[in-house]
Image 1 (cartoon, rainbow, N blue to C red):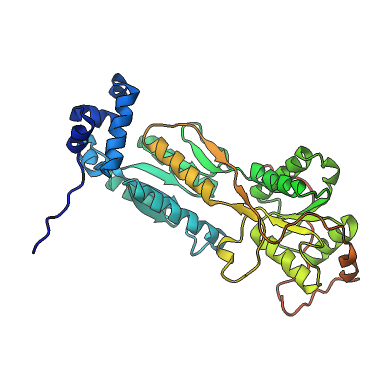
Image 2 (image 1 turned 45 degrees about the vertical axis):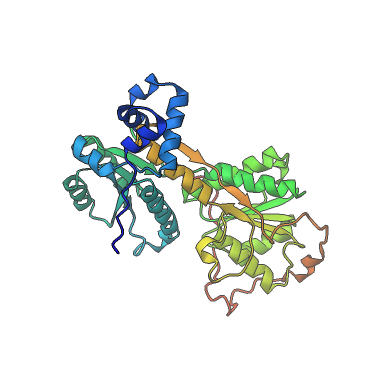
Length: 376
């Protein structure tokens, strides 16, 4: 026996259920200016009927009527296969694709260095909405210029770079997020909170350093502001000196990779975390968790990714034009606890640095960077 194919709900079905005409359903669901001519109660009734009937707008039909492709988003991303430093961004791109798909939009991914070929492809497919996820300023400038010339709607991920006056940018607020982590540690009772950063040639590390300082000041711990190091990668020698000099009760790591190196350092020298000192990271281990069972306190990026996606979609649909940044939420784990007052771990610190630990062959000497900010 053949089953009749089930068709999706139409605006006429919604109109019948809500007790209004189909034109008012169309106005309300499209956020048309004339939708304001009906009462808020009627608008809510129409939206409730649409939700109950699982209505999804036919964006392909809208494409035909408008003369441009309003059902597809061009998402321009870096080539993470050949740029492994950006590999950690892949899950965020996937979340964006899934979010836009769930809201009825197709997504075409463009990556690589040939920007002109990308632009030709976008024009040939009559795509109007462009979501740029490129960290390289020169490539971003090309995208902005292209979208201006062809009157396309472009949204950028990346507020750490100077935003464009005519296009919105959305990203995480690294400075506020770092302050969140420091305030969390201070709330546990820590008053000596050290920090380990990566290179200050990266603007993100500058922002996280400033956020760490903000968190110290907000917690009344400004006297701890000299308790940090910044190195290219991680240095056992520099970290050892930090511990000996300041005896911190907590350590803030600028990212999950550095947090892992700190935990491995503690494991090698039999320093119990968090009884000796707590360790908290700017982010969670994320895609590193498949090779490390360590439970490290950090921040969760998913809420920020969702807010970015919602903001981008609101901009494409004409509901929002403002740039915005969002702070991550803290995710407590086993690496943090209130200070124990036990300093016995200090006797486990070595007298000299061991540069040839065979279990960690890349642990070579790193030179501390010169102080100062990179103002690019």
